[in-house]
Length: 110
Image (cartoon, rainbow, N blue to C red; front, side, top):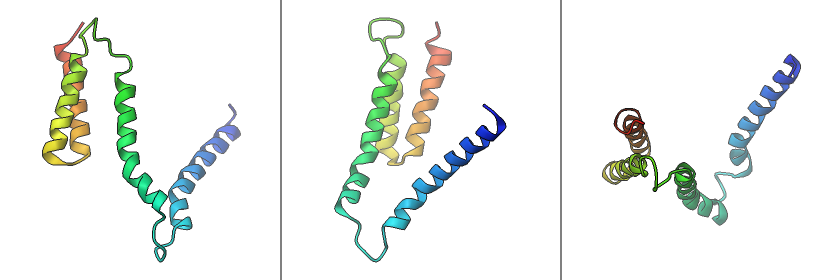
């Protein structure tokens, strides 16, 4: 890929990023109520995205070999407990990731 093509690619990516963030502000006015579909999507999409992430992360876990999914299960339990206790997003995600990485690096080593 030439330098010009790289610059065009970076420019298009930046434009797409800015456009997707600015489009809701351009299309939706503060004076009019938010459309019901947008409110519905705002309520259901966060849970759907996290559900897809869980499925994606567990798709290659084998319960019949290796660590039998124990580090993943422990990390999911820690993430759920942190979420139930603190009701935040960043702490459970970071805590669960840290626990998982600790377990696979130091506890469940091959």
